[in-house]
Image 1 (cartoon, rainbow, N blue to C red):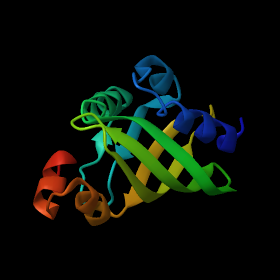
Image 2 (tube, one colour; image 1 turned 90 degrees about the vertical axis):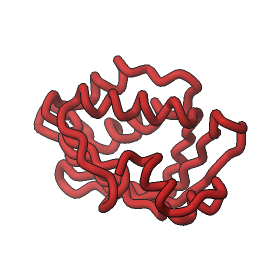
Image 3 (cartoon, helix red, strand yellow; image 1 turned 180 degrees about the vertical axis):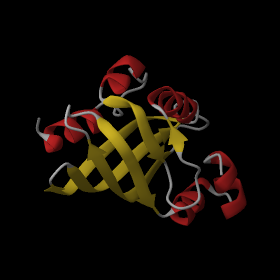
Length: 140
């Protein structure tokens, strides 16, 4: 099991117009947790809930290119510093933001805990909305 390779593979699945939910699900442990925006978004519990959340997100945007700037591994934890660029489905506009993603993997190489830290106000500004509208979009 190589946690870095797993996380790189996982992030590569998002640079697409149609999310391959089965491929995403295959890299998640059944009891995985996901917090899309720390600290404002609720934690999604379980692989099925995570996939449902990602499908919801892909109703808003697609082609999320995760450009990894730095990656560090400590045991079974992987830290990524990225620049993510997504195409908004509403108007085709691209939004770009800096993200730190932290992933914990189990002994089988499945993701058990995934959290994302990024500046929601930066994205809200790019979308021309206020912070409350951004919170609503993120399900917070």
